Length: 525
Image 1 (cartoon, rainbow, N blue to C red):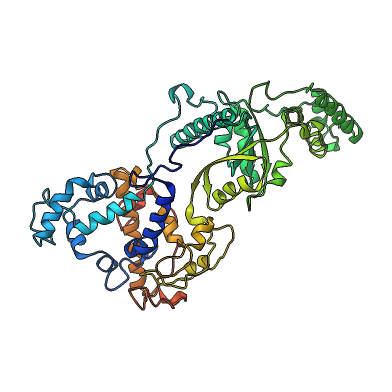
Image 2: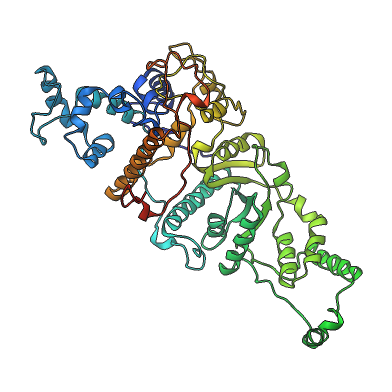
């Protein structure tokens, strides 16, 4: 049997020879760098103008601030994420040796970043996973068909197209290495089922089980399935003469001629007999084509027995399609209650997939691989890390922070949810140099983890910083008018953070989403 995977299971920097070395270095850096801990969760934009002295001068060294004053914001972003740092090594070192700690008098194009800033950037970059993206296969030959992409914007089309190709390639690799194919794809939090619809359509033709907790999303997805020709449009069959007669005699309270309950049961038994023998009246897909089944279920852990027990083969799917096509909901409900012998004859080999797995959904998806024998693989793209719960309680050692402990931080840090972050037992039991056990990321740090500044252009960056600048300025106005209290932090080094009441800092006031026109000026905002 062939083996899957590569020599490096993670897309690591060349500075590391193995994943073990990388994890050890990452844990050490995350728990020993006070600046990293301060910038990632130890400060908040709302306190930028409400604190004295201001956060900017407290957090960043003066040499950094003086150099930032000489640079454009896009140049700073390019330095942080893209620019080759080797060009600064000689010039920055000689400048430092000459005692030129400040760069105000140097020409802008000749000034080099402070050595401390360069080293911090190197340390962070070294621990970043490589994000180079290579499309799987020929993207032009596997573009989403127009009727499949209905309802998607350009961003969603891009995401679904590439992820669908990746999943198709992954299932093929699993089939080659294990000599058994994946029978069904379980889409966690399917929503409008854009990904599942693409995978069930040509050229992939996968069997998809869309798991969604909101009924209105399922109904919306079924509407798009009809457009994508994956489902039969529900037809209403009626006797025209009887219908006209009923309309004419509406005031007399006449009604349609309905089938009796006995007739409906007979229809169901006849249809099931045909299905058991493999002769479905209406087959939603021929041999080799994909299908979609919807399961309304709220995922709260990695155990999927209740979902797996409801997965049906094509014959049952055909029965439901028949019931929908003839417009007989009573028949559909009867079919759901009856068990098919064919269901138990299929060995399920499942792959859990999800695009934009929100919060703990990624944890549940990964755990499903360990908790369900029929789940053979997972392919997940996470998002909204800020919505993850926290597994560990508050730290006994106070992390470097310049933030007041407002109620939201206290509430999230004391959740102690076994399904929350960190999922890894190693991160839960890791003991840092300060003897604190466990790795913690508060809600602000997890919100920062969602951002992708590498993808920002000049307009995106300007809009991002303007939104945060306006919000921080508004918080100062709230403070001046007594709407919120001034933040109070007893010790800037974070060693005494016992103030956990809401009155100790700037209470969060949620503004919500605003129109773009609101950001034309602060007055408009």
